[in-house]
Amino acid sequence: MSKHAIQLPNGQKVNWVTTLILAGLHIGAIAALFVFSWKSFFVALALHWVAVGWGISLGYHRLHTHQSYQCPRWLEYFFALCGTMTLEGGPMFWVGTHRVHHAKSDLPGDPHSPREGTFWSHMGWIVFGETNHNNSQFMAKYAPDLARHKFYWWLNTYHWVPVVATGLALLAFGGIPMFLWGFCLRIVYGLHCTWLINSATHIFGSRRFDTDDDSRNSFVLAVLTFGEGWHNNHHAHQTSARHGMLWHELDISWITLKLLKSVGLVWGIRLVKPEALVLEQKAA
Ligand SMILES: [Zn+2]
Ligand SMILES: [Zn+2]
Picture 1 (cartoon, helix red, strand yellow):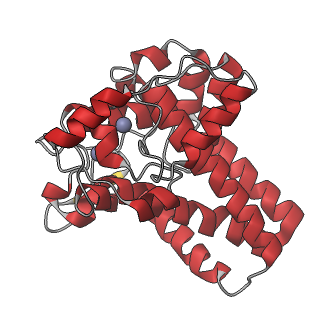
Picture 2 (cartoon, helix red, strand yellow):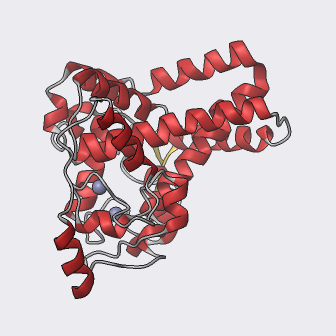
Picture 3 (cartoon, protein in one colour):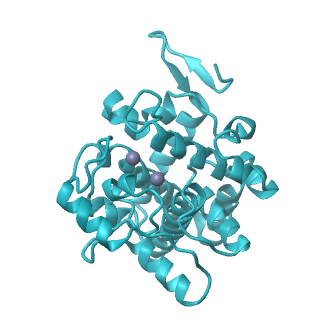
């Protein structure tokens, strides 16, 4: 059992450090609603795009896990830094966990399948499960490509440093209201958006592709997560850099990627052949 876990009378373990941090952030997020200002709101929104849009969707997910496009090394590192702003752990932890999710989707061994309970798939696996957030040695097994870089190794172990520094900067320059919005509420909102991909898009929504898992497509979730809600498309074609595969499937990360490509910052984009998409649509 991890040294950060305690055992409940019913035998279940609780990661008390994670639980206390999450509880504190949720209290801060509620408090933020009482000190609203448009300035704090827009700072939080901008940080949300940087953290979840660039860090998770473009970085940890489409680049670091699935290598669905290529970019300069400094941009790879920058996206990973943005990923830590979500408090979803460092790059080796996130990538390793997600690769196991794809390898065992909705089967025994999937870290967060709703078949083991909706709450478990949403946040129970973080509160009650084995915690390896800072265990870089362990996560290196699942992300050996990232483990070769000293930067990722450092960032994985000290993933909380950049986000805490940002929080302190918000407090210093914007006071408590800016801290509550840009740190507490923004992180809590980003966490639940990401967690909904693990829970809701394996329960609710439509299925274009007849995959072996329960993955589904959701427009609402795609809006909340910059395109990650097209989760059935993604499970069917994991290396495709474009998740919203039809013109009406809004995928803000895909639009961002096209912009980055137009200025030469991104290349080698992997996509699904249009004819494959049509054929599979008929088959589904
Ligand atoms: Zn999934
Ligand atoms: Zn994936």
